Image (cartoon, rainbow over all chains, first blue to last red):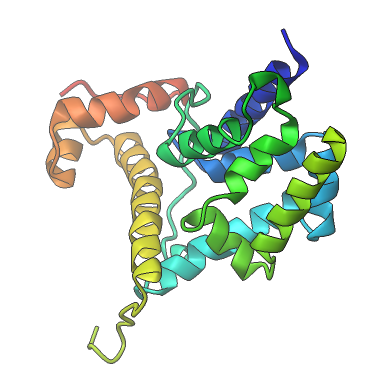
Length: 160
Length: 76
């Protein structure tokens, strides 16, 4: 198996664990972003770190986005004081619409599959202009366009 | 809640994000509430009727998780 296939599998597997922690039945783009942050792959890590992002910071930003979006309609997740439900016995295996879109965008950013690098996956996630990830990044004060440009630069440099 | 207390999102992005977040919150509350009810001795038909869905739907969505959690389930 090519190194990139191994990386994609690792990110999807880790994404499934992130989704499971969330109690989500599907793996979404923000779970893939958390997975990328949890993996010790150098280029993606450096790009995220340059924007002040690690796994913890992304998780915090996502929680903030959730509360913020609920607050827009006068709802607070904290208002529901129910015991935490038991986790599903199995990890989710299905990719949600946002994750499929992110992977598709990542894959189509190269002409030939052999040119695919881990940073292309991150790029695919960062190409979203609306949805949970852009909103969470904006709330965390991250300039998404700047981060995307930085990821692109690492890819161009690597290709030289 | 009066209209003065209810914030209405002006931006479509905020309103759409609110829908996504409410769905997620509803799923979380459903998982917790169904588990609480079943631990409290409710039956599948009762939980289904209270949620306004079919018994098959609620069973399909929650049975595996509750069985794995060791919840004693009433059949009827």
